[in-house]
Length: 271
Image (cartoon, rainbow, N blue to C red; front, side):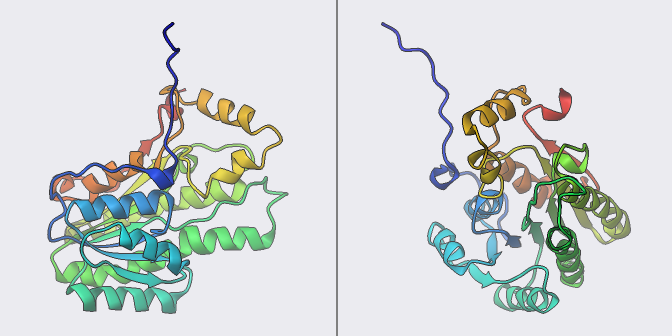
């Protein structure tokens, strides 16, 4: 008897990242949110492509675990990206360690579900402090160093909800919409300096950030099926689905690409 075909999706912790070329050789990158999810996948893929890395996040133990998966010696920096003092420190230490800075991946973020009435003031402030203010402060802090090396690439991790709205995502979608437009404005302002700014807009990617949406539901399997059903490609995203585009945007292959919001969404926005 022939067994029916089953689709099995790897848990992000067991993600297998293929060995590729050295597309990021001589690139020096800061990756925030590097301890898990999309940030982790970007960091591991950047390392395999030859980049020198500063791994940034709040939880040092997670960053150390990611660093142990890499060849070379990444700089591990525990920091709060909503804190300007922490931002200045991590940029200074990165430049002191590696001698410059070419690439920034702004992945750190939070997600609080709820309507405009349900989200608390504290949740709203935290969402914008991390998703928008921290991203702006860090992007601003790296600009002088990118000028010194003749240019660079800032890659912001936004969301399809920065393009389209959704139920119960009032603060999150508003923050990601701000990221999309900040990306475009910075691209316009700094293009003449060869500093490119783009953003990636994922749909539902299975990470620690999105896990509670399914795991805390009354019927987790029903919620998973519903989420899959709105993606024509027939599955939820994995962090590595985002990392490949991040490599392209960090590399010289995308030297004429700036100010663009790239949906990576399994067809979600096409429905």
